[in-house]
Amino acid sequence: MRALSVVPQRPDSLKIVDLPDPVPGPGELLVRGVAVGVCGTDKEIVRGDYGWAPPGRERLVLGHESLGRVVRTVEGAGFREGDLVVGVVRRPDPAPCGACARGEFDMCRNGRYTERGIKEIDGYGSELWCVEAEYAVALDSSLGRTGVLMEPTTVVAKAWEQVQRVGERAWFEPHRALVTGAGPIGLLAALLGTQLGLEVHVLDRVTGGPKPELVRALGATYHADSVDDVAKRLQPDVVIEATGAGSVVFDAIANTASYGVVCLTGVSPRGRSLTIDAGAVNRELVLENDVVLGSVNANLRHYHQAADALAKADHQWLERLITRRVPLSRYAEAFHGGEDDVKVVIDLEETS
Image 1 (cartoon, rainbow, N blue to C red):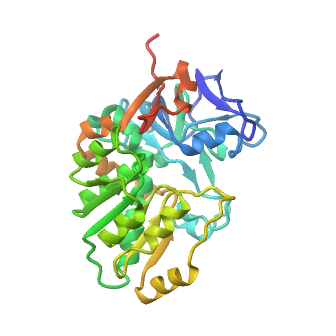
Image 2: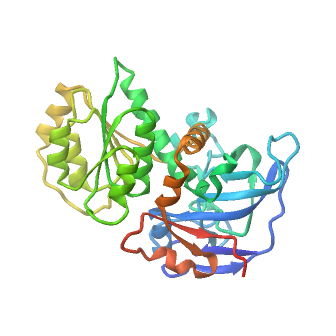
Image 3: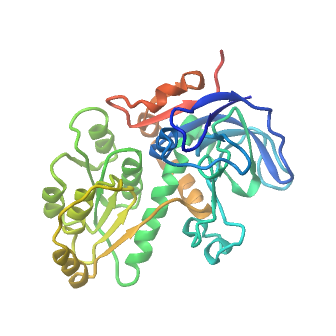
């Protein structure tokens, strides 16, 4: 079988390799790959910034945003041949820590977790792959190829869950949400915000291309002004921050409603300095009972929340979110951004 493989922390090592077809072990499903999504983490691994190969191996099969169809099932696992499934990314540490032992492996305390396609376990970027039945999640068959959006949806499902949990330390009935960044994470965060019945606003720098219309199609409002101006005017109860840009982060923190919750999902690059009034930020957080939290990855609960959210979504809207599909044989094209790209996907099923 063909697999998309990289030598972690070695730039320009990405290539297709031929590997033996996998043989499922006890309790594992055999899955035919349909597609993998490409995100910023994948691009970092390809640049050589990140990633770890399985122990004793040089190369890592890339791909953590999975989609496949079950070829061989496991008796009693609840799956049937032909089911559309995704594989969970993270696995708990072998110790395990207290969080991992309780199924909250997205909150691992000691960093000894592993991740498919990222850290010490091969990913899903191959024509066939195996996955433990307990780490596979079935999708509504009507989603078809848009089911590849499952993993990024789990990230925002967790973010919204964390916002709700923080808010419930006291009376909490949010009305208005601001999402900063209209990439896949931001747009999916906006989708879930509208499903929660909130008045959703999305801010991004671009004024053309598909992003503004994708936002409007959700019934949300698109903004391209500065975050300071927009947030100051809106005074959102909740901010989902999906850019990782330092100036955006701090302008959002400074302009929420009283008891505002800001959830950071974008990862900021190191080495960029920013001058801020730390005293004013501190004063705002303390006197208004505001909260800023970070959120990353997802556990099984969030995968099921994401599956429900995608099943309820407008499937045509989901398809429009995927702005470019690249066949596996032309994989390199997926790692070079197009002007109007929102989500790029590598199709693993090729007829020729």
